[in-house]
Image 1 (cartoon, rainbow, N blue to C red):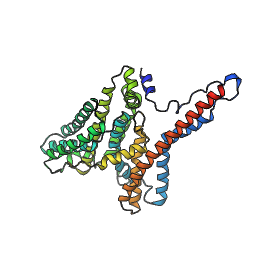
Image 2: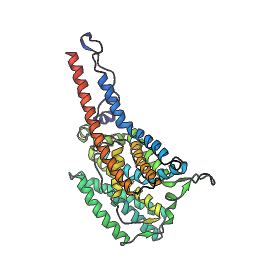
Image 3: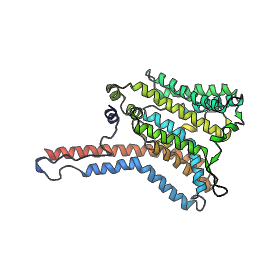
Image 4: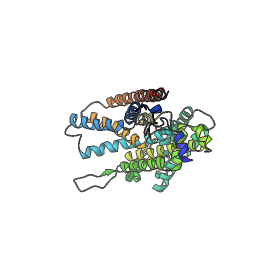
Length: 371
């Protein structure tokens, strides 16, 4: 059943592995139109692997343009640490979109999780309890969003409303102020691990957190029954229902995972500055969406890859880092981010159109040669 469900959610059937070509009819040699599927394979490779090529080209370009400061181990660690927060939120957005929903309440979820944890820590409670409560708040928000959405409401409108509620709730918890001095969270924020004397300062904690999240998330989405069904729901919820699977349950699960990752992102952000802030910054969702769009995640759901989402976050951090080294004003990084978002959406549309046209042409060519 798992195989039938995962196949129903595919958006380009046979594009990644065309399979054996049909035998030519009436003894016509080579009448299979194999050239077209080969061009489709190239286009699909560009869609699925082009982001890795783009990141490699950016690294090479900045290595020369920002020499000798860019291409160093310490700077690479700075880029990875800067990308960590974007990657966490992008993972939440990406998994939501793969499930067929767009959760815009992530900034509010992060703010509430941060303030809940901050309130508990400042009132003398254990660190583990504060973290668990913050993550639990994210799960609760995901459940609420999911249960409302499966009643037939538009998920974008629902999560915008939830964002407003959560922003106000975070301010209520904090009393309009912040919770400073949360040094108990340094172990998951500013602290570095694996340091080697004076030669290597170590790797920041958020990098390890992101690595764990993306490894676990990738295994879940690609190697488990629930993960495959989650992707299938985003691709074709009706086909999943006809296969006898409770599609609404997996939509709620998508919201829960998205809320959990948003809460984790809020806690990591709090740990970095040792302060819980009730302000829900909309820039979080903007940069996360850009990373997801760069990764080629289908905004209609059902197709995507967490490793590519991670590379999308790294691309944004690489551009920002390179421009900073060159002394260019930071608002140009925001301009580049917006341009990348628009460019990636345009590229996705052009690529999908080209794939569809070539598949149709190949199919027509085969049928004409069979007649």
